Length: 291
Image 1 (cartoon, rainbow, N blue to C red):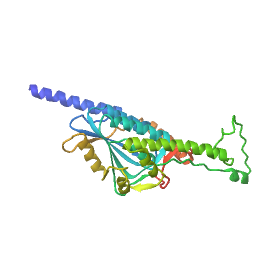
Image 2: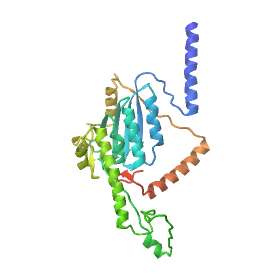
Image 3: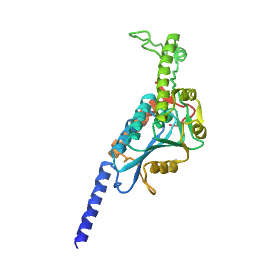
Image 4: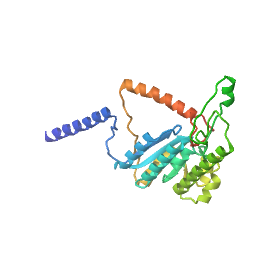
């Protein structure tokens, strides 16, 4: 009878945890056995809040023995890529981190992967594209055809640098090139540090060209060829886990039903505008239209 009562109390306690976790949007997985966390960096990199939060949470979770970072992105904004890089670097200092590259892990995608303990790519993964790009579109002639004129009041001659309604001057181009060269050097330094390579060894590879996973391995940019399961096995090995580890994904947030649809619609609209009209510095490979 005593065992029955204790068992009933334990089951009730477990059910209570599951119900509460579901209500607050948390994970229902109990910290039993060896666990490997999975963080997914998928699609164009336009923000970093969610990924950074997931990485930090897995770092604090003592039941997570290692983390696999699934990277499938052509890259994106410089700032978000650098923020992710920093958190991956911090995580790798306290527990094993293995990157699993998907179809594309280029430019900012490779930047994020660089500080991991190991990088696993498919032989045909598109990676590399180590470089910086900044694009501008000039609408001046179009506006003239439809009879629209733009007037600008500015505090300095370079305040409207990159303006779509006037030609780019040689001074503008020189300033922007200096800016891009500085950010490019930051990129190369980050790769050299993360991969434990010499700066001069990375620099010849950082002219924006892309590589297959197989080529990247031969150049030292990737450690091993394989798929997601291979990355999980490698992470388990680095964490000294015997047997098949349990994979843990970050909990999905569960907003109010109506709020969810409103946020989703507004978020997709803002994302589309931001991605299509962005002219900021980017670590991105433009050979794909993936979002």
